Amino acid sequence: MLILTQRHIGRIMDEVGVDALLTELISRLGDKFVEVHKGVAELSPARGAFEREGPAPGVIEWMPHRERNDSTTIKVVSYTPSNVDDHGLPTITACVARFDDRTGRTTVVADGAALTALRTGAASALASRALAHPDSRTVGLIGCGAQAVTQLHALSLVFPIDTVLAWDVDPAHLASFGRRAGFTGLAVTAASPDEVARSADILVTATSVGIGAGPVFPDAALREHLHVNAVGSDIVGKVELPRTLVDRALVCPDHPEQAAREGESQVLDPRRLGPSLSEICADPGIVADARHGQTIFDSTGIALEDHVALDLFVEWAAQLGVGTEVDFSDEPTDVLNPYAVGAAAVPVARSVR
Image: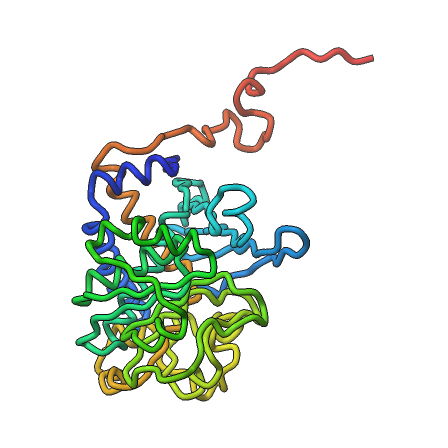
């Protein structure tokens, strides 16, 4: 079994370069969504979750994806908004495991924090390339946590961005965002939520707003061609966007069933839901005219994206010799005896009274 820790993931990013990695991930993810549309690959099932209440509210979710006769990938991800202040940990932590589809044996276990951020940014880039105005140059970000870094990075790889406006309810997060995203070469200007939303060609919302506390910006004087990547809605009752905007815009989900349950689409009449990400990746022409109007990518995150991201990192780990190989489950001396493993494989005398 291959183990990829956070340090291993970081070394791969350093060796390969984050531009090259994310560019390749965007390409591979686009190809995979096309396969889903063509029926060559399957869309992941909707995720399951435990919602936590009390002193540390949040969600622990499990997200499976299966490639028949090859492998199954399962991510367990935790969303805990209090982590940063209370424990110095990321809001989103995750572990990704892969299993051989024929034997069920565990083949890979990887830290999933960076993979989650990268694949979420890649999905937004794909959706934006199909739905945003082709001359989009101004990106607005509401929410400047870890997800915002890869969101801006991914957009900078597919659009000629020259202006970045940002807002966060936490002054420290807002103040540090320019430094954290500085590798993109883009300067970040702090602005109020309404100014960010009014000025943006592409708007990203990636917040920890509470249930019932949204929207995170007003529906006032928005650009006619505004495209929104709504990333933060991942719990029933949590929404980031004004209902009036959702009602009039073209809303395209990554996973229709999941988005209708816990994304921005949960407030939308199902008959108004637009084509899915797999559909617009396979045939961007079906939304070409919509690029001149207001559009929303309802990004709830799916295990298919984690599967593709893990593929990429496992391949680079092999090329670079990165990771730790362990004998997680040795072959037992007797497959019918659960005690015939390790030291227990040697018979031990036992006294009987």
